[in-house]
Image (cartoon, rainbow, N blue to C red; front, side, top):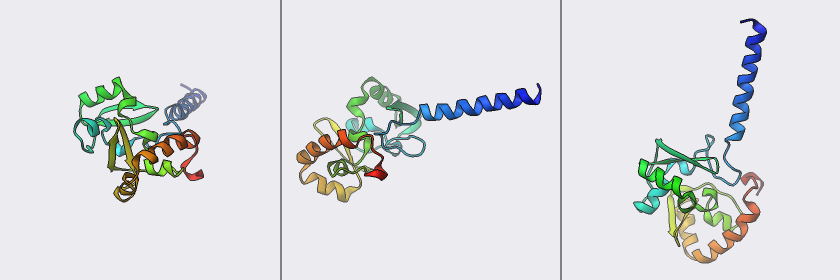
Length: 157
């Protein structure tokens, strides 16, 4: 193989990799880390089934809105795959109180609550305490605000 052929092949491979990374990037409304991992690797189904924040494993993973979710078991992964809308956190995993205030904040997977069958996360337990003072009104505000801020970068809010 000559040098030109090698160079062309390398260019093709690097181009394909660059394209694939942009194709698989999490949707703009998703709170993820630099590897597109949602909820810091916590299992979203476990909040419902075990009533606790449970660290997931990369051994059991699934994607939703191009974000990667980890699970503590194959059963939880399969339940999520069957109905991701049921288990995925509201507002793409951003802080529910923050969205009510028209902001996008990261969350602490330990600061969570299920309300009316939906998972809500908060920045931390202190913020969650404030959110719990008037949850229904904050959810109404967040639901309205989310439509406007979903695709806006957190840095621009």
